[in-house]
Image (cartoon, rainbow, N blue to C red; front, side, top):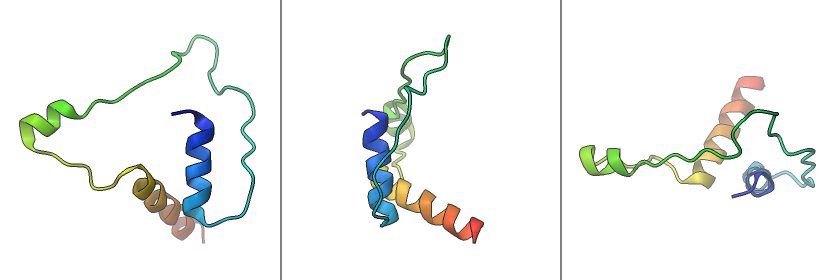
Length: 70
């Protein structure tokens, strides 16, 4: 998933009517290009399940920031 995809999803959960403005790649010199998390081990070993999917997590995070900044 590209950065612009995450930005568009965050705009969607925010309910705002704005166009994304992603500038640059966001990858500083010397940093790794991508990082991935794999929760399969904790799912198999402990039966863990995430509380939210990506959109739900973005919505919850957005709501937290709105409450905290108001």
